[in-house]
Every structure is written in structure tokens, then in C-alpha cells.
Length: 303
Image (tube, rainbow, N blue to C red; front, side):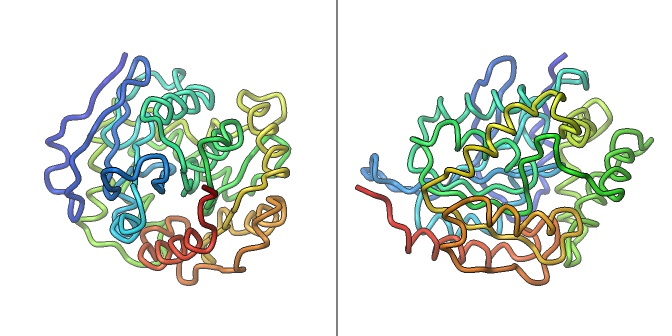
């Protein structure tokens, strides 16, 4: 069964006054917000596609959107099952392929081009495959606290404990998960904003299933797509800028291998985001947006 989230849930969300829009991606509608851009810019327009991870939504990018909007169009969707997007109640309906196909349809229906992909966590797990399989749409990559798990990687004991807790906890508090993934403290209003898309268990299937979708062996669903993505990233010729939070215990060890794997990433400044953990957009959003605009300015689009 497909369920939709009531807009009333978002009445008290602070500092996020963007009008939601929706794209039909099949059985469901994928929500997004956008800002920036200018009429008449046409094919030359810079477009920032900002993809969140688990268990957040487009709200995570609110500190970055104003700065990015000064440089181009900013499009920030909610992954299926998150934010204002529709969701399946049945956990078995979720897969890497389902999420990937929904994102692919979203980008194609909006006819996005000249994309600078800004992606974190599952935003990278889904966005990097799309960028490497449709490179004509993408101008640059900005992977943040993410990776491409193709089933050959080793996951830490801490990650396994997290995955088990998310899947089985009797009372899963999304706001607490986000708060614990930040270096800086969050206000109660912000924590409640992360809880807003998940009023009860009917709406939590996506949040519950994301960790379990990470391929644990090369035979798992999604592993082939991600293995191919690893190969394509190793041949990526367009600009790439890897930005990780120094205080993220989950992904910080993936930063150097990713930066060395993407050929063009080492051409960009070797920067860590200090005082930032897994949800680095919360901890240092304004700083990160400035780094990204500088990156875009020093790697102009080829006309």
C-alpha cells in the first residue's frame, strides 16, 4: 500500500519556506523543493542536485540552499519514503533498484542538465550510480560522507549495531538519530522537523530498511549496479570534489579511498570539514556551500 504524508505535519518546520512540488515517478510522487536559477539561462544554467541520506529529507540542505542559489538552480528532492514523498508501507517494497529507478525518473522528467551532484550518505549511494550512468547530464560530483558499497567492503561493528537497531527498535526516534549524528547540538524545533515525516510506524518503512539494503556480498541485490559504478568512477574525467566531516565515525575512513579512486578528485583542494559529523550539512552547511561555489567557479562549464 502507498501512503502520503499530510502537509499539516510540516506546519512548524523552521527556516524552510519553500513550496513543495511533486514528480510522478511511477506508483508514487517524489517531492522536491527548488530555489535559484534565472529565466533565459537555458542550457548554460548551473544546476545543483542535492541528495540527502537516511533518515533525513530536503530540510537537511536549508543552510546551503541560499548560497548555492546565488550561483544557479538548486533542486532538492526527498527520497521515496522520506520527507514529503510518498512511501510504501511494506518494507519488502524497498530496494536499491526501486530507489535508483525513482531518482532516475525524477531527474529525467525534470530534464536536469549541467548538474553538480551534491550527495551525502544514501544520496551518494544512489546519486553516484546515476551520474556515472548518465554522465551527459552531470558536470561535477561533490560526494560527502558517502561511499559506493558493492558488497566487497567491510562494515564496522558499530555500523552493524546501528543497522540492527534501526530495523528492530520498538520505538524508533528519527529526531534522536539525526541529533546523535551531528557534532553540534540541535534545537528541539530542528529535531522535531526531522521527526515530522514519520508520525507513526506506517510511515517508517523506508527509514527502517535503508541500512539493510546496503549490499553485504557481491551477490546481494544492488551490488552489480554499485560495482559498475565503482568502475565508472575510476574513469571519471569531469571535476570531482570530495568533502567529508572529520568527526563522522561511520564514513570518515572512506574519504581518502574515494578521493584517490576518482581521478579528478585529487586535482581539488584536500579539505576536511572540521567540527562536523555524519550530518555535516547541519554542522557546517554555510561553510560547505561556500566551498562548493568556489569549486564551481574554478571548474567552469565547457561551452
